Image 1: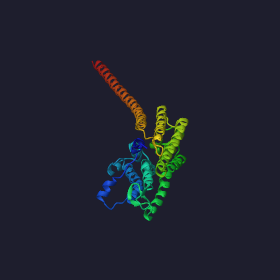
Image 2: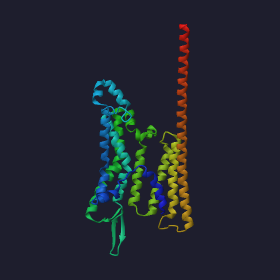
Image 3: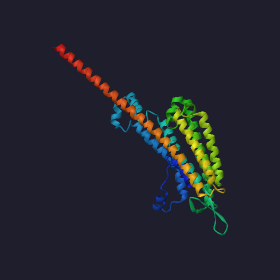
Image 4: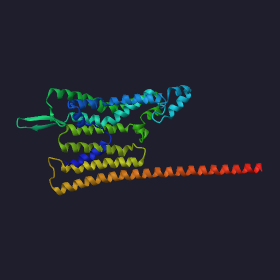
Length: 350
């Protein structure tokens, strides 16, 4: 199973994950264990409450305005200023709290699921006195020890709370906001999640989160490489069919790109299948050819994304240029009107 295939699939995931500097932490604090680092990851979503508090204070202080200046303003003027704040846009405290926590959970989701999967990833070794299972990320941890089993059972709770609870919680909170404040409140609160999707498929991103969860679980708990590839292939086939039928994005180009991306991932898995043990093709020519094809497919995909970004950037620049020309034309016309008015006044004076 070529490493290049795994690297291809890690490119997109690395853009939406974060990692503690484990080596640095263990160098500065030698007593930090793998279990403690795991629990640090699991409590990291608490940063969402800190961010929410900071945003709440920013909104309450009208953008860090001095208290004396705030007291001089009428309540209506304060409300107008809050609506103009670029960070909060007049949102209330509960809405800010929901927004910050959901954004934190959304961006930490791949990391949290990956860490739960990593703590459950054990490898079997035989040192001459029978097989022994050791943790893949830390060979000093025996997977049969009582301490590890306690952490492992705790990780099952986290995978339910985070892996399933985050997508389900987003959907439940969104529907609750819809009942309380209507569609506009729901869309305003989850703009980061629903932007670019049609209203009917506004929770499509939660389906993508579930896809990440299922793929990570397959790669962790399914040991046979061919079975991993087959399972991921069927997932990609199903998502490609859903994407083609539903067209959830509100842009035709975006729908095409998403479908092509899923097709490219499916073809990558299909091409990697002959390289997976136990029936791995050992011919260097075949291996090299398949790897070149895989890299070419993904390079073409990246080139397509680059071309779309280039076109979008060019359109934005063209629009900005037209707006600048329009402003210059308006200023020229206003200047001409002032000159005509000035000459008319001079004639009247004369």
